[in-house]
Length: 247
Image 1 (cartoon, rainbow, N blue to C red):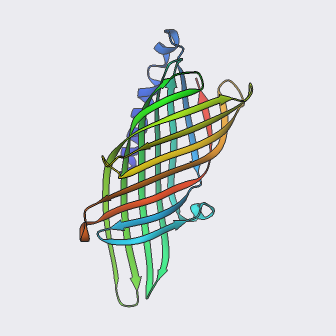
Image 2 (spheres, rainbow, N blue to C red):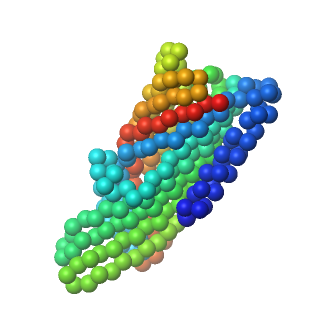
Image 3 (cartoon, rainbow, N blue to C red):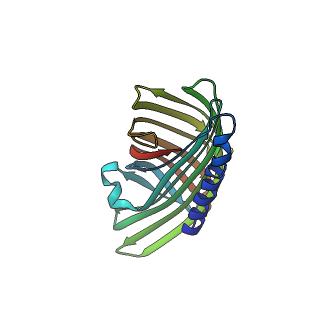
């Protein structure tokens, strides 16, 4: 997915969620809007396969900045007493080099994950969720050795349905705790995909909160076979930090 497409996706999401702001504020339901850019220092562990060639991906979160070429993460949501609509975007461009017999193998992964979910708030703290997650992956494997140099690249896009739940607890007037879990794929796109994160936040004002937590996203996807095999079986997990603006 190109940078222009990503910016367009961000703009469309912002219009979708922020555009009704003025009308929703004056109408019934007491809608609240949140825009939250964040960063994830995530380790990546798993296997990437491109056109039948597979390499092990093992990037500890302490080294993520050495391997990360570009990353952008942002969350949007709007909610009232009973309903929630949320959207989340993650974009990462990563490279990792590994010494192998007679040379060096380099894996490049460009990952875009965009999700939209709707939720029913059975109480102020608990929300049931259902949604869809678009995954766009580009993979490139290159080998530099004493005998020959070669490379191959492949890209895939798919949509995973998912269901989940979210718990948000006010610890005090200023502090809050957020817990989220979902599971999906179900062989519609991925074989299986799940996500979980937990955050502790501090409300600095009515408008701004800061939060710190931990996020994990596991995707197991495979298509094709032999020389057309594309495989992405990777767990991405690590600490996250963000700023939330509420209106």
